[in-house]
Length: 218
Image 1 (cartoon, rainbow, N blue to C red):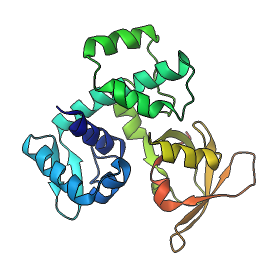
Image 2: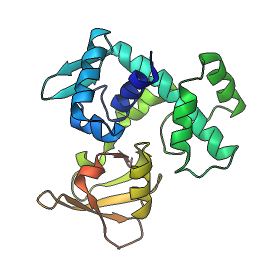
Image 3: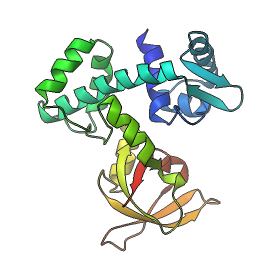
Image 4: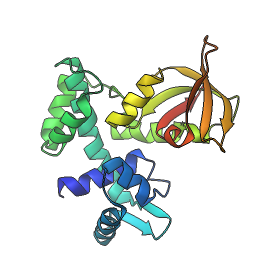
């Protein structure tokens, strides 16, 4: 499969496309492409059985597409761990480099890399690395827009995109932070958050909040 098609599968998975319909507009935004270009690629992926596409609603991964996406994402996240831990790259710098490396990495190299890194469970952005742990994470995490007012949750993953990572960094929202959803204002597209032991309001766009994944505190 071409690197371009692999990128589509990966972004679909990361945006919840194994269980939710992801709009072409959303995919286009993340890949910096035009919606017609995305529609054309979705049709191509449908033909090979990787995606189910519903016009005007969005796309979902098939079981086969999901498994392929998980293998690719595993390689990407392993390279991110390597780049941060072994080459000391900043967490916000590694996405592009890992993008280049993942497509050229065989399963044998990925297995050796995982062993060399002593089998890390998560990448620097909080994403699970093993396919089995990805399944668990998908079941236990929600995007911020699914959380009700006054609920307290923990940030577990951020969608791996340079602009999004910088956005959340600017708002001092990090992996492992406990946050409470203080208020949701859909008219203004704002959600107000408070971090544990800090009364300072943090306001972010509800639209952007869908790229911040959290888990409920047990």
